Amino acid sequence: MKRVQVLFKFPAGLKKAIKELAKKKMTTQSEIVREALRRYIISEELRMLREKTLAETEPKYGVLTDEDIFKIVS
Image 1 (spheres, one colour):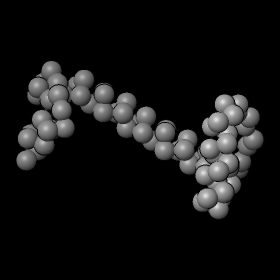
Image 2 (image 1 turned 90 degrees about the horizontal axis):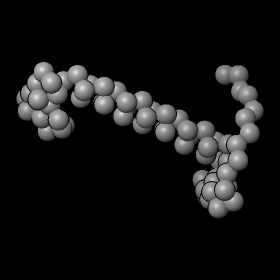
Image 3 (image 1 turned 45 degrees about the vertical axis):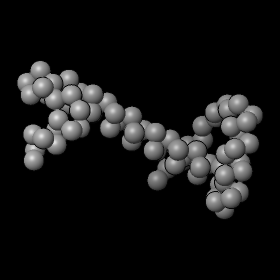
Image 4 (image 1 turned 90 degrees about the vertical axis):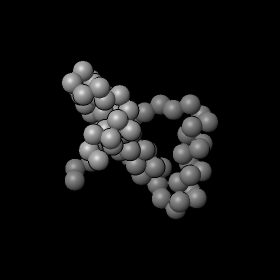
């Protein structure tokens, strides 16, 4: 996988936390940030998909919560 360099600016406290976590996990600061961004992107994609799904199913089926979905598919 081709890698590119990106410059980010963090508050000093966050930078310190990343550095300390990388040391504890015996990995690089870059890997800590990459993993955090991967997780954030997945989380946001799932959140947006959930919002879209609820917007489409609520009017048709009255689905508002995960419990509503469970009742429909059970």
